[in-house]
Length: 247
Image (cartoon, rainbow, N blue to C red):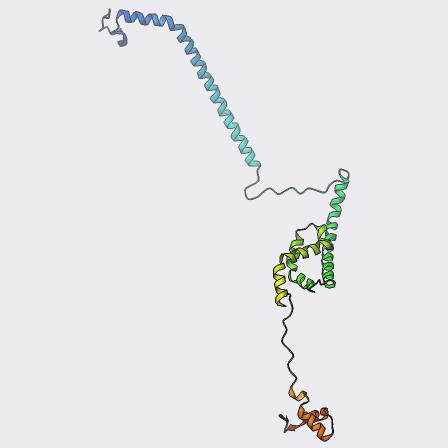
């Protein structure tokens, strides 16, 4: 039971109903822990200050990062305008004379090899004309598959393109790819496959007036003249202004 007047307004409401024993217990707890509470309060204040410092540093770092990003963005080229590759200049003769020499002669060498490629191709064509092979159709096959052979050689190094043997190897390789259809065309005599002009048939017989007939021969024997003379006389016959027919 409280030992003071509960109605006394000077007494805090929280302690009006406390008994003397409970009051003593609280006082003893406070006496025993007041130093510890003071220490905890100090630690709490220190923690708050540390957190405040960290937040300040974070804000400063965030602002610096934003400034750095803005600086980098301002130095980049506008979108849609990609960086143009830097074209390296010619090598200095004093720094690397061998590389500088190679750079100087490379265009001329490439041009020479390109001309050599055309010459090597012409040499292959001449070789196939002179060596038509067992069936005599090597050059015809070359003409038929010329595009495939040229496409194959275009993927070779320029040095190989200028080598006639490389062209012959390419011809043999492409010819081997088409071996079955070539064999079939040879078997059936398909001249169109080899690019041959189709024959227009046998030559038509000469007109009868150009042929010495049996009748011409009989008349020649009868009159003692040559059959050619009889033929010429027959061709010269006319009826009015038109040649005579049926004689």
